[in-house]
Length: 277
Image 1: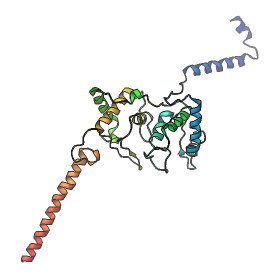
Image 2: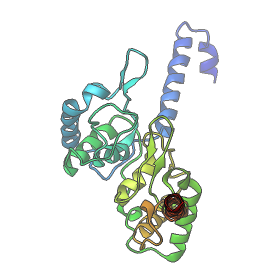
Image 3: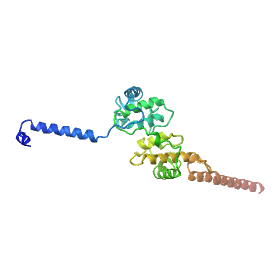
Image 4: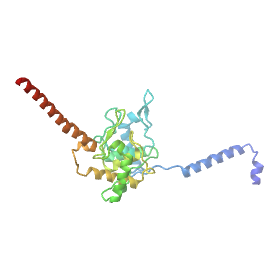
């Protein structure tokens, strides 16, 4: 203490205090800053990251920028958004479902046959994950729904009806949204991609992070979706859009047919009366 008190007016004392403050701030940041998300896709493998970078420069950089920083349009919008911090899960979903690369600019990317192989998708995901922290590809523990209890199915149904049916319909058949967008059908979507969609919130879908819906509850939702899709369809069907569509078919085909017959009979009877008179 005596040393500090005798040297506190030294010309270099202010610089020393500033240096000490910077070192302390750096130490605190290193201790508490979030680390990079660790994906199952060999994110820390330099060779895989470099492979992903080469694929990115050829197939993605024209929209997302040479360093995935995004490209702004003249009007101020995003020609391609920044991918820094989106994580491996977002890449695996978008590329793995064929939504990226987009065939043409549109309000919403459409699911189609993937352009890249699984190995190339892993490499792209590893490269993007190396650029900043983000959600990792989910562990198979939370996407395997081969063994699921009735209690989990019930819980998954409750979560799905509460959070998903407003857009995706009660059986995951999808539905229309404003501005040319739509909630896609969940039929045929893999368990991994269903989890990643909830985790990353692609396009207009909300983000349901693991803090909002736990991995266990996500697994229950996925199990419920698959269970509903595997159930035999009852009624008229109507693409699985529910009882309202069944009722619409009944009115249009059933009641509409009866009205048509009644009109025909009335017209036919009027012609007969005119001929007799």
